[in-house]
Length: 478
Image (tube, rainbow, N blue to C red; front, side):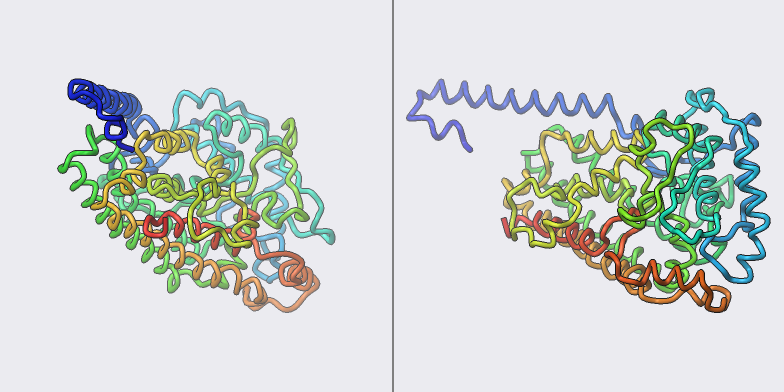
């Protein structure tokens, strides 16, 4: 609202005084915001100007005191099989798996506090321990009662919880563990790029799994330019002059191209990662304590007080900090707090509105703090576009690009999860039908509940709610 013009014929000197006061007030707010950003640059949140949420170099190996963890992870490589897999190849690995788990149980409980002064070593400890936990849990042969709780030995549980609390992230396998920290350089003399990185640990040992991680990494790296655009916007000294508005308009146009590229990357996974292999051979390794919903088996972290309160859902694409940064920048209202149109459908209202916020608890703490700093901006770009006619179309184009991305994500998720949930796992090594396969089919195909993502959420409701929340950010409907 124009405060000056609603005043009843104020004297000219008063109009000038009020204009100057409002100008000084806005300048002070912007100056304070710029000062905050200067004191908390992306680098302060472990966000690199070249590699984004990736560290610029691979995580270093842990000190020799922690060799027992590194050795256990290395020994597991290619030697463990899913506990629910009854193929001949899997059964041949059972004896080694039993010995490996016994070794894990006998390990001493190591204190991680000596690592806490080094961010990369702390991240390495989380990465190694989280992989060991999922390898341990999912290599246990299935029992007759699939609801039995799973005990994670204190040799893994206690140090993982300790280092997770230091890092401010969940004590379980996360997106960071599988993608952001799970790589090495092909040529150590060259910088990180999608062509100069290879993933180190794989659960299934398949090229499909490797391609899945590569697609995720490629999307994250493409998002680095997106982070620069956000930083440029928040660093503008003034957003009301013609030069700044022109830059914002150009950057929103660039943003459309970046989002469309990420959308293409998501679709490019189809010929590289077979949906059947993903659903039956890769995805089960990702599942966390509540992945199968309320009735699924719970993980008990031995020696940990109040372990029931831990976040243990497992890795999810919803933990990508790039996508959260994009949502925050474009002011997508996933929690349905704003009155926007079209009104939420009944399905939207039934969805998990706190999903995106909860997924941030699985991110490295510094990255979560970075997102909080973005959300605290005093000048949201949607608000600016709403009050600046020349920015409305560029802003809406960016929102529409994000909606297209989410439409494509729904199609991919339907193919890789919903459709595959109705298939059988028999393609694994040509294994014959067995009691185990029957139990597995019964639990996954019986229709006892909705199809869930790796984090245990109702997948269809969740993805459609995210797409519709994005649609409601459009200005032309509001």
